[in-house]
Image 1 (tube, one colour):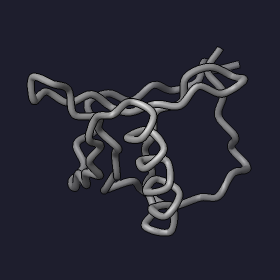
Image 2 (cartoon, helix red, strand yellow):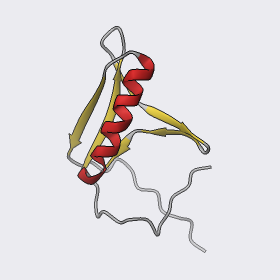
Image 3 (cartoon, one colour):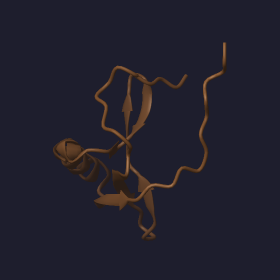
Image 4 (cartoon, one colour):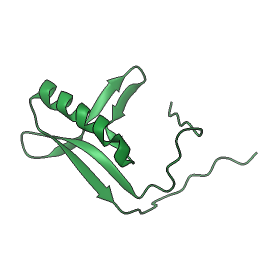
Length: 88
């Protein structure tokens, strides 16, 4: 089940995203994730204030896997689709 907290900390429109990427032996990259009680959670953030937490996670992931981890920033926004809730 996908969950979203509509009462969470609003950030306005998301126009940038920070991502931890694990670097594979062949040079490819994959989005780093952490396993929680709710399942796998990708290591991403939309606000700079969360970067310290990502950096801490990057260090743990790099130490556990023996592979480099990079912090990436993507900017820009392109809405590909919009999904509206069903009408009552």
